[in-house]
Image 1 (cartoon, rainbow, N blue to C red):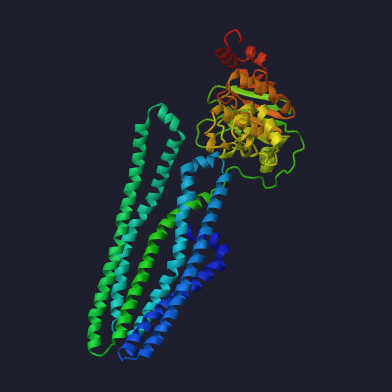
Image 2 (image 1 turned 135 degrees about the horizontal axis):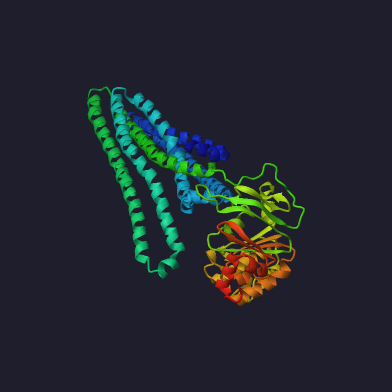
Length: 576
């Protein structure tokens, strides 16, 4: 998966990466040339006392060094820029793919895991690209070139390379092989810490209300300790690498000086050649060490690439139509025909054979006990989930055959959990209609009974809204969500228990104001309070995922025991 991911997202930067390869090769060859020049200065300049030769060769060394530095700087710049753009593209691809997921895929991965995959996992692969541009290219060139240049200086000491390099590779290979499982476990531990922390931050009010701080602290401590233990195990192995490398480097240096001194003494080798051979051996071992660092990063990046690939390769269960309907002729008539829905792995369907029609200008309400399938039913209309039997039709066309953007453009949804985005009041209201004027925003706020408190806020429409709307009350957040849906002027209005946080007076005023604005729209309301739906054109009573009552309030009180029981519990026996 790692190779496939790199090939796919680095393709646009092939020219820059080719330049990186060329520059790194040039810089490495310049680095390999320097010890040979240094040997010449010692043997032909210092030993013979030729000052002119020393100056001339030294100047040439400075020029070669300048070329090496320039090539390295440009190569690192191009490599880092390509790596950053690679990371940007991968994150964008993950975000786009997750945006196509329905609740089934999101719940399957889990929000914390998706966050980790789009941040930490991408960063690990991105770091591999950066280090590849600086190490992976230079390491093989330096090792092969170092061997050739070292043999050029003296063949008699070549057996030292045949001993030092395998010893270093074996020692580091053993360490790396034990690190890979730890890195794999570390990513899943990060997921767990992210999940626990996200839950605690989101539910901080609940934690405090039930005085569960010690419990949550202990829960986080367990997750944190697991991650710490895994990281320490990987860290202990990692810290062995540098001492091992230094031990082999220093032992090799001593061996070269020990055996080389005998060859110099016997006249088989010059001092400059010995110095150059030692430098080349160190360069070879440094190249092996760089390759080792890459060997450390590749397994972890491979694990992360697999996790990224799981997201990118997962197709949404809500497939877009192959030949989508691009126009809707009607005014937004909604019909459910024999609809059933079954969650994957569940023993029983949530919804059973539900059929009803919501016409334009008509308000239909759905009521029932908690868990009866009301919100699930509402989610079928905008295709947040798909039916497992039957069909949902808009203007007589199955929603699965309609182009998704066209379908969503006709729908205004107020979810059960009112959510606002960080920004301003205006930016949140224009979420569904970026072209809406300030006058249209104020009109929607008036209908949603939010005009007064927005007018009182500093900046009014430009008043800041915190992430999730945490700086406004639950009722204000709900009214702003309703206004956001109304700004869109949809043909189908879906209210998923959208009035639950409102007091009865505000609820009544809002419903009265909604009438003129939605008189040409099909309105579907999910509610818990009878007072919210008492004037609806038709009321659907759900019980256990089945329709047990359909009609107006007065009819259902007489004919539907389940509805009569709800009315009696809320409005009293007289109302029933």
